[in-house]
Structures are given as C-alpha cells and as structure tokens.
Image 1 (tube, helix red, strand yellow):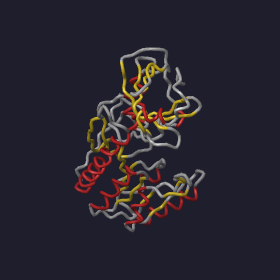
Image 2: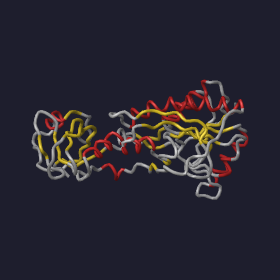
Image 3: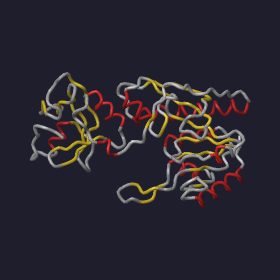
Image 4: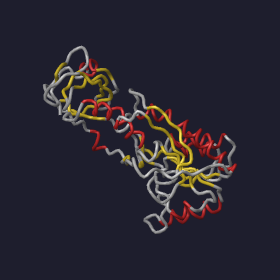
Length: 316
C-alpha cells in the first residue's frame, strides 16, 4: 500500500523500518523539527528523520499542523505536500503533534495510530511510563483508527505485553516497539484485504497518561517506598529522579523496598552496603546513584566519590 508515516522517537523509527522493509510505498515521512541535544546543544535529527534520509524517503518537518494556528504556513505547506503524496493511509507513532481534522480525513483509509497501552487505559503522552509508575502488571499496543479526540478512536488490533517487576521505561519500550511494528504490518495486511474491523473503546476504565514533567523528578520521601521505587523505574532514562545530598542534587536510579520504618527522609543505614532511607511507608535501600556529571554507580562508590561530605542524617 501507499502509506505516509508520522513519528519522531526510536519507538516510531522501529515501525518505519518495518514499514519500509515490508515493501510498502512510503511517499512522505512527517517528523518533529530538529531539536538541540547534547552538551553542545547542536541541532539533532529525530531517529525517524535519520532513518528516512538514510533510505531516500521524503521528509517534512512542520512546526504545527493547524491551518488557523501559529504555524499556519507550515501547516499549509504540509497539506500541499501530503495531497501531492496521495497516501492511501497514514501510520502515526509517537509523532508529538496533534493531527487536525483535515489531515485525519486526507488519506482514503484515514490515520492509524500505534499507541503504547491497552486502551482506554493510559490515553495520552506517556503511557509506558505511567503504566510502570502505577504498578500495572500488563500493558500492550493498540492499533487505533484516529479521530479528533485524545486517543479516543476505535481499536483495530491489540497485542498484550507483561510489565515485569524490574522493568524500566527503557526496557519496556524495547519490547513494545517491535511488538507495535508487527501489529502495524498485520493491520495493514488486513486493511488491504478488507478484513480490518473497528471496535469502539469501552466507556469505562479511562485513565490519562500525562506528559512527564521535570518537576515530578524530585523524590518526595513522605510517599510510600513502593511508590517511589516504581517512579524510579518509570522515569528511567528520562528525566530520572533526584534528591538533595548535602549541597548537591544527586540522582537515584534504582532502589529496593525494605521493611524498616522511620521519619521520612531519615538515613537508617549507611556503610559498605546500600544507603537505607525511611519513606512514608517502609524504607528504600538505595543501590544505584549518580553525582552530577558522573555515571551510575553503587552506593559504596557513590559515597566514596565525595569522602569529605559525610552522610547526612536526613535527606530532602
């Protein structure tokens, strides 16, 4: 089929690679504009753009798609380019821009979205992270027919994936991305054969996966230890969770819940093993930490890197 594609991060690149590898005609790829990245803040192309250019696929990077919005000139140009490309359908995967009505109706078969949750749970921007943070035991991928709502469209195909007890957003992403690509190809085959069936989403069980904000990264020791531990894994690799250690802001990447109690933030144990810190319920043994500008290390190496600081009696 003749399929336009819209996506930006690695999750989407995996799908685009599968789409291209399966022999579909991809006349146009939409992706977010290049962003500053790295210490030098040089403009960096998205993983989707990098793949598209490496394989000779046409790329458009509108800053917006609303014809009456701030970037109306970009939107008008993107519309003309899409109309010229004449796709039969568009596949969307973690694109990052809202698709307006004109785009949803432009391809004959509309726009199909690869969403990283079992809808209607975790509609929104960060379904992988929020599933881990909430302690969900199962998640998955839904191929959805897009409409003007926020992830409200009819479900076309679904694939499930367990959330493992030690999953981070990175590890779960790395399993969901190829699962999404496989589901996409199955859906396009069914679409071409006329056998793809749409099922409306249930009206109950709707939750929203809000975008991860950096302000959420600061650890609140008054929260239950199990909740903090899940957030550590949910926010790995971005944005990470931080806490004040003396006068520096350190990051905590991994911890284990231990059956100890104390005043939230109180350091209950420190030595050759993990730092143990009291939480609102139980405590956390801090096992992987990072100083600013450093690398992730175990607790003993973390403390040894700042021998003059000493271990405070309380963390904030």
